[in-house]
Image: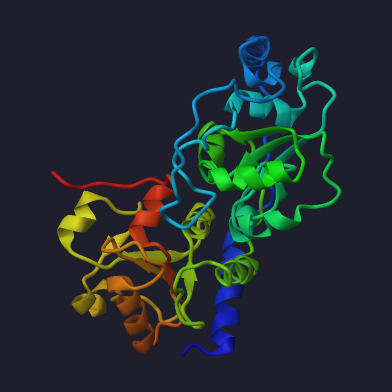
Length: 328
């Protein structure tokens, strides 16, 4: 097991490498976007002209969440209006394009229901984080007359929307495509990159997740944290543990391959305090597989700063992050 000192030292190194200020666009929507938004806002067929609800339709077919993450469904919740990304951007920027629309003069709340740790790293500026587990105790200072835009990684589960609606909010939308689409449109985000604090929040999130987590000394991190480390230019080796065909089919940019039985060659020349992130592509769990075995073996070999990508390549792919293929 890693010592408390080793853990704190790892966090100090990672935090120094990953610390960042809020990344917020300095300008508002372009004139082209404002004009397009005005046209959308004037469309009388949209929910905002129908008291912010969808017109009556046949009873929706409800699906269950398959992954256990109620903030990452890949389809919009039935019966709930979807707020187009462009209109959400106009609301977030408080643009004058809202004048004369049903949104004018009403408070707007971007309600982010993702885990606290994800929200910590990046979120829509000014948004409020109430993870799914806390929806029963929404902040009491939220104005029930607010336009509420529920934000997940993609789409929130229909039960999430039902809970927020039950709190008394009458104008309720979900963000089109969630944070994945918001970022894909290069809209502003803000957050922090202190990995020590991220780790603390991640452990707090795991206390209530219905999944089997790793042992307390297992240094796991999610795709978002790994992406933040990469983007910050952290001195880190990313190691894929698996066969050549799987690696060639798709791997994280910058990752090198090393088989479980050939770790000595894979880390040859690295200092014992090198930051190493390992993952594999064989399974979808928070730990397990070749990569967990490799992480444990690397620690036995004396490497003290070994991280494991929770969810493996599948979680990285589902987060919408880039994949490199070298297959012919």
